[in-house]
Length: 316
Image (tube, rainbow, N blue to C red; front, side, top):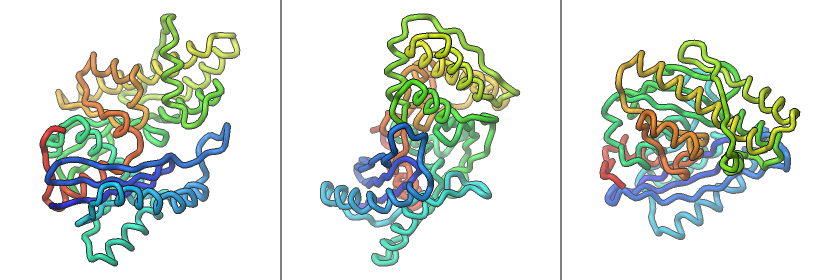
């Protein structure tokens, strides 16, 4: 039996996962980082401190619950595989991985947080075989609104940026509008729940520059709507449908550019049921379940297995 440990210490979540290559099953423990009431995110120093406190507790819980021990370790060490992509919080996971691998003589594989999101989405959808073919992936979170051309390459696949938001990111828009409406950070699930209460039709128009989008106007318009006395549910719906409209325009532009390719949607924003339903109906996109859409270590464990040649591609 080969078991692969994945570690991801992102800006909002501490996460560890064990992937059993014999069964194709992932076992995971994760916990959001604590944030102050009304705060919009975390300073990196606070994120690092929280990961240091949480990582050991989650590791103990995961190993005690499963009784499994890893034969190799994967860890996310930067946000994206690009020059200058760096966040101190990933050092916590990398340090823990280095310590464990040095002590136990285990292979260590390093990946980007973004690569982990893509792999987790493929795993959740039972589509790991796509790692051997080109596809388009959309990664929408607090730090990214990126469209990516993914092709077979090193270390498992090669990611080429294809389009992005030119200003505000989708997750930032969700959280800023959510706090505007009195919701607790991170605001995604609560904003979606509020938006589902809106029965009024919402008209939105995305701002595009080619395949790229601009989302800063979403925050500004939501503030104006609230000042005009519109219901919070309407404002929430406007925010989410604006992001969905931008994502739809990006998707159409890239399908025109690259031709018909499988479409994979990953990142915390893509756990929104409203946007997911829209993209599934119009494009038949591949989505992760919510636990694999938000920050998680499952994709990192799966990528480690792929690098070791032990990936099980059975549908889960």
